[in-house]
Length: 358
Ligand code: ZN
Ligand code: ZN
Image (cartoon, rainbow, N blue to C red; front, side):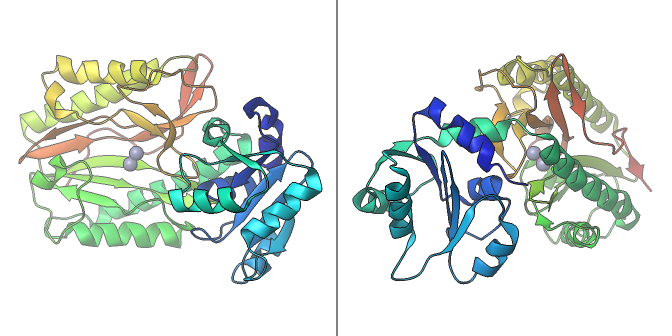
């Protein structure tokens, strides 16, 4: 899978003769090839795409990158020299660059050395990546199925006395075992009072009866991320825990019901936030309803209080409201949905009824 042609089609609309890609996620999106960190540069011109990398990655790049000329960057002929050769070959005047990613020093280096004008064009990539094609959706669903398989197995290990870290380690192992390339982020496992911190780090604390355990985790498959959260109870729940759980579930349903192409991200967020506020927990839901998921675990668009733009058909976002009561407990439930005309499709299959493990 590569997106050189899709990028090429947008060059004119953004007023650039070529797009220079140094950001790791954008390079992967363009080429379908992973080389870590800053070790690679892609350039997409109107009639030719290039992928340059160093000796550590060149053999793999030559095997995997299709529809582009693959070249080796060396000490004497570095990225700037290679780009300048393409600038001369194709008569490039304006080269788009990732103004929302490139470091100041990198920008200065390219500005000093390139024989073309640099123009900020991150949005060309953001707008393209926001709308997923069929191959991307297939990878996203593949990543989700692996996470769900790990979840259904982890329940057997979740008993009073097992630590948060042990659960996080087992989830990681299971996802790798079932085909994940990597984790999409470090798994969050938070029990009892730790659950009131939305991004708690798994600790040596053992889980105990009468506690909620929130697990937020995902993996990467064919370069695309999955993201899911389930909150389950150990032993028993109090009436209040039951109420909070079902409020979060109702809020998630309300947000999902509001999500369709053309609706703004903030309207989706507000539909969910209203359910939580109406139940009296408004002050305990501080983050956004959802974020885009794709090559990166957090990308555009957003379904948050400040995101006023409409969600496009083909966008893939999380649906993850939560209630976090400091010092006591928290609940979050997270699925991932595909925005469509007139509605959305939930790619998750894992049950969400309140589960009380023995
Ligand atoms: Zn998550
Ligand atoms: Zn998420």
